[in-house]
Length: 161
Image 1: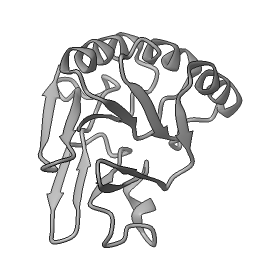
Image 2 (image 1 turned 135 degrees about the horizontal axis):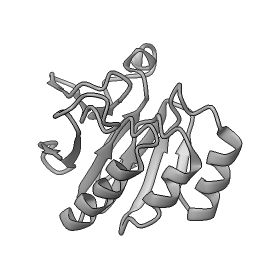
Image 3 (image 1 turned 180 degrees about the vertical axis):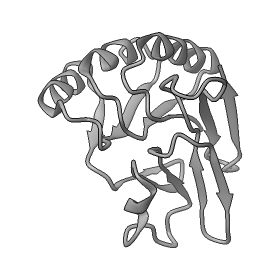
Image 4 (image 1 turned 30 degrees about the horizontal axis):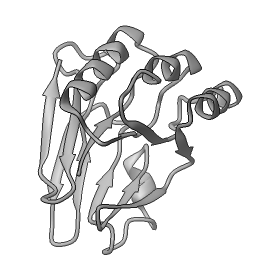
C-alpha cells in the first residue's frame, strides 16, 4: 500500500490544487495531512482527491468549527494529535508538532509522521521511520513537496513541485 503525506498547506489553494493532481496521478491509496490546513475552503479542494483523506489538526487550525463541518461534509477523518492508525500491518502515529511525539511515540509505531517545521525529515532507527515531507504552503520558495510512503517497505519518495 502506498500512502500520500502532506503537511502545512496553510490555505495555499494554488498549491493544494497541484497537490491533489500529484496524488491522483501517483494513485496513492490513502492520504495523511499532518496539520495546519488553516481554513475549510482548503478541504473543499482536497475533496477532489481520488483517495480518502485522514489527518490531524495543527496549531494554525483555529477555525475548528468550519474545519470540522468540511471534514464531515467530505467524509474525511481528522483527530487531535496523536492519531494512531493501523494500515497494511503497520502501526502509524501522526502528530503535527514533532514535540507531540514525547510520551506518544512507542516502539510499536513503525511509521511516525509530522509537520510543523516546514522542513523535510527522514530518519530511520531500529524501531521507527520518522517522516515529514516539509513545506507545502509556498512560504519557502523551491521547497514545496509532498511525500509518498510505501507501507510494505517503509521507503519514501519526495515529490517537489
